[in-house]
Every structure is written in structure tokens, then in C-alpha cells.
Image (cartoon, rainbow, N blue to C red):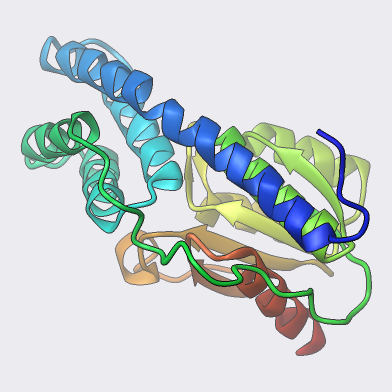
Length: 239
């Protein structure tokens, strides 16, 4: 697809819509994988609970409706804590994922994006195990913000990137296979002492980091592209 040189915001919207469409199309397959992981969990299979948590995390990241997002968050938290509510929460999520898709919670009409705030070009490391969310962030940060972006799909990849280069801002997903954003922030603080560290999660700090964290900010996601850019600009300028 060719870029619209006369209207870069419209071109970005089209690309974001394409990413969202692919994410929506993947929901049935993710729900099926969740059902299989839940069966394995009932049978006591090793790593099955982590598979349930990971799939719920992915569904939460691509959900466009509050009900589906909230149900996925409930499963993710229950799986992380090995809570007794996991089974019931997972059944609710599966039912919502199998049902007819309601209208998106966000209003579809009107301008969704605004030109990015003026500010310096930054090097940003985006750490998230969900590919569609990394792509959305990258498109917004590069096309709207003029920033340079490196992606990492796991804590291990993030640490390798931090060893290879410096970054001004690091966006950390709160819960990933192989580690949490809270724990990764501690390691990132050692490797990138000058970087601004941000944890992104649908869950609150009280839920996932009741004892505190070393990040500079904790932002509730999902964030619209313009809001993400605005918050980054404010965070960097507050230094």
C-alpha cells in the first residue's frame, strides 16, 4: 500500500486500521488456543497456566470492547496469582470471545489522531510480547512522533537491545512470558541509567506492584497514539 504523501495522518490511520483488522481476525484462533490451554491446566500439564496467562494477555491487548478487555485482564491476573477464580474467569472470556463482536467502545467517527507534539527526536525501546501492539506503538512513534524505535518481544530481547544501544525512553509491558515489566525495569535502570522507564498495563500499580517499582511512570493501556506521544513528550520534558 502506497503512502499518502499529501495526508500522512490519513495514511497512518489506514495502516493502524489494517493492523487492528488483523488483530481482530486473530481473536477466534486465540480463543481456541485458550480453551486448549485451559484443558491442559485442568490436567495439571506443566506450563499450562502460563499459557493461559499469555493468551489472555494477548487478547487483552487487542480487545476493542471494554467487556472483552476486562474479562481478559481478570484471567491474566488470576493465572498470574494461581487464583481459584481462574476457571470461571476463563469461561467468561471464552464466551465473550466466541460471541458476536459488539461495536467498538471507542467512537468510530471524528479525527482519531492529531499531529504529534513538537519535541526532540527520541530513541524508544518498545517491549511487548504481542506483535500487533508493538506495531501500533511503532507506527505512532515513528510516523507521528518522528522517533526512532526498536522492538523487543521478550525481556531477554530487551536486555540484548539495551546492551547494544542507548535509549531515551523504554516502554515496558507489565506482564510477559519470561518476566514482568516491573522486574525488567530494575535491570533496565542498571543498563540505561539515563532512560525514562514506563510500565504499560491495563492493571493498576496496586494490583501488580503493591510494593512499588523503579519505573518513572505507570500508564494504563491502551493509549491512543496521540495520547502516547503527548505523555512521552511531557515525561521527557519533566526531567
